[in-house]
Length: 504
Ligand code: GLU
Image 1 (tube, helix red, strand yellow):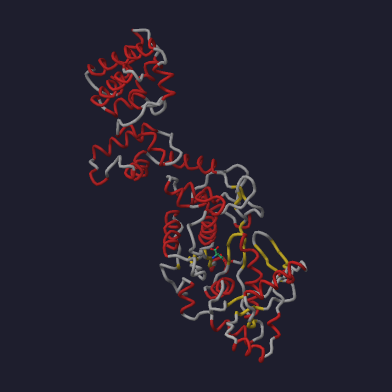
Image 2 (cartoon, protein in one colour):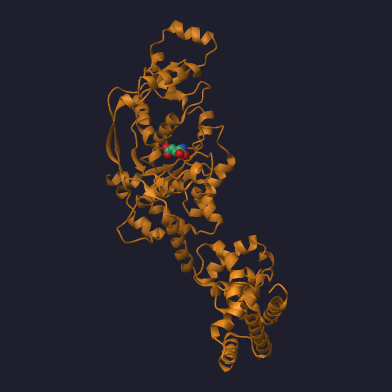
């Protein structure tokens, strides 16, 4: 690439709005976005909605919002406009953008009308299978006489338009995959306009790439087999094609392509957003799907990605989706947030559970929430984890975890009586201490255990279960202070009732 081209780089992501934003789509967006940032270029978001039956407004909105959430802003595009608008293909179709190109192809003899019916095409395909031909459509309509065409038209047949594939190899010079020579024998004459008059993806895609002055088409390897067809169309029109870069597939651990059909929501960017993954973690994760800087570095800030990402160093083979790695990255990025920012990030999750009402959030309540977040510390893998880890701060409607109860409250009458004794003493002590702060609480509890020869851990865990229902969580002293004296005493009483009752 020379310097002028670098400055003028224009790249695009061209999603079809037929579903959610896929992890692979997010990666395509990121690689394009990084390439544009690195080359002082322009990132375009074009909406490829030629499949009108499957395209929805909702999907389009979800793609916009997913990309915005990731911070992958575009310079020109569907909702933004720009010098080559419209950027939504259905609007371009209604504007007649593709008509003159089809006309030109028909006139210069590189495209022709095909009158074959679906039944005839099925029979041709079946025959091709028997003869083991890779190019199934045999191009028979290329040679129709005017009379034959008129007959078909009189029968009411509506023709498609097919582009003639060349007889010479097509060379694709791919930034990632290198030079590939495509045997023309493998390509059949592609339909570029359906019988209902609608242009197809291969035509609209390359025409738009050329019209929108796209310099580099960076897209998933699943589109690799369409590239020679699109090049053939451009060549037949005498248009200069962009450079191509095909990014390897995202695979699961057994080597299968990660797809909506087989992996469901696991490939949906929104799933991660809803579960409390941070956009920084997602970006870092998808950046590493197929690309590595060296064999050491895993953590990349967006700034570092802009500095270090290199499209030419994206691997040729598929990259494996590792959820554990994403979780690890997310936990890392959560700990990078200071307590105040982390509180901002978890509040929507508390709110969705009805545990916090942001419309009535006082400064005091906010400060209390921050202390809870501080107490939870580095235990969050996702923001959603804040719910199971802190629910008991907001409500005493929890069950005592059976395993924890058995272990720490005891499974014999004798041990349970001892637990009741400990909890009763702790209750009296906590009711009587002059101040309810960390230092006072801690020393009063230690004084009691040490003077009475009670194992610290036994007393702590008995109390923890009484207050939270579980044996895991933040520091017990934090919990005691954050719950406050009245709530602590109330919960100890409830535990004692539970222990003394028939069910205990
Ligand atoms: N519309 C295609 C898709 O959503 C992308 C095609 C392209 O990038 O050329 O998969």
